[in-house]
Length: 562
Image (cartoon, rainbow, N blue to C red):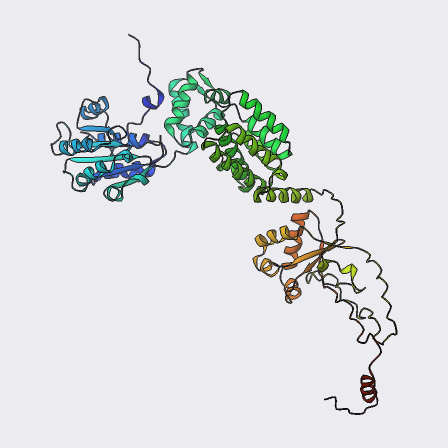
C-alpha cells in the first residue's frame, strides 16, 4: 500500500505554542493562562490568512484538556491529545461558519453545550470564519457567550473582525495575529528544507516570503509546488511556479516611462498581452514596483522595508535615480486609478495603455499630477545643468528694472559673512524740475551690464526652504526673485526682510536651497524696485497768480495763501 503524501503546511503544523512562528506575543500569554489556570470562557483570534489562528485554537483546545501539560503546552502523547489530533474525541468541535451560518446551527451548539463533556475536562467549540454568521445566528450565540456553562470554552476565529457585532466582541478575550515577518518565514522554510532534504536558495526563500505577504501557509504551499518540480529550489523556479513573468518587464516598463518613450511602453505591453499576462495583475505589480521605488527614494535603510534580493535592491536604487519623487507619486496615483477602473469592467488592456501613455507623456494629460511631473522634470533638468533658451517674452513689470530710470537696484545684502555693498551715495539723476517750453522725452537709459531675469524656480526654492527653515519660509512665502548674473535678488513687500536675512543663518539657508534647486552656487541680495522718475512739477508756463505767489515767497514776503 502506497504512502499518502501530506502537504508541508499540514505536516509541519505546530503542535505546541513554541512552534508557532511570529506570534510570540499571543502564544506566551495563552501558555501562561493555561499554566496558571486563569482561562477565559471565550477567545477571539483575528488576523490575516495563514498567520496561525486555527493552529493556535487547536493547540489551546488540546492544552486545556491535556492530562500532562508542560509549561502551558499540550504533551501531545496522552490519549486526549492523540484523540483530538485524530478526531476521535468529539468534545472538541470545529465548525466552519461559512457553511454553517444559520440560526439552527448555533441553536444546536447551544443545546449541546448544556451537556457535560464525555472524555475531556472542557467542551471546546472552534468557530472558524465567525464573521460569516447571520444576524440571527449571532443573536442565538450571544446568550451562550454571555453566561456559558463552566465546562464550555468558545474559540472564535475571523479575518474580518470589523464585521462582528460589538456585543460579541465585548464578551471575548481578543488576540490580534500579526503578519509573519519575512525573516521568521525564511527561517521556518530553511528548517523544513533541512528536514525534508531539499535545497532552498536564499534568494528563492526571500521571493517566496514576499509572495506570501505575511501568510505562513501560503509560503509553504508555494514551497510545496516548487519541490514538486525540483529538489533544488531557485528564484527562477519560484518565478515559474508562481506564474510570474519575472521582474524584468517591470523595470523595462518603468524605464520606458522614465525616458518618455511611449512607443516602447506600448510595445512592451503588447508583448505581455500576447503572452497572456493578466492586465489587472500587471497593473498591481507595477503599482508595487513604483511603491518600491518610492521607498528606496525616501527611506535610507530601504532593505529593512523592502522584501527583495540584494541585486533587486541595487536595481531599484539605480532606477529610482531616473525619477523624481513627484513623478513616482504621480505614477502610483495613475496606476491606482487604472486598477479601480479595471475592476469596474472596462476594457483592461485599453485602460492600462492609456495609463502608460499618460505616465510616459505627461504633456498629453492636463491633470494636476501630470503638471507636477512636468515641473519635476524641469527641475531635474536644471539640476543637471541643462541649458534652456533665454526668455524672449516681455517680463512682468515688477521684475524689469532695466526698463526704468537708470537708478540701479541695491547690491546684494546677504548676511554678516557677506555684507552687502552700500548703495551709491549720489542719487540717480532726476530730470530738471524747471519748466521747459516744450519738454523733450528723456533718452533711454544705457542697458545694464547684466540683464535682470525673473527667477522662475523660486517657488521650488521656497519648497526646499519650508523643510530647512520654517520661520524664513514664512517671511518669504509671498516673495519672488530676480536673477542678475550670479546674484539672486529677493523681492518682497515685507520691510523686515533685509534685517531678518542678516540675522542668524537665514542667508546661508537661502543659498543652500537655491543650490539644491539649480545645482549652482549663487550669491544673494535684496532687489529694490527703483521708483520711476517723477514728472516735472510744472509741465507748462505757470499761471499769473502762481507766478506772483512764487515771487513773493522767493523775496521773503509772507503771503496768506488761504
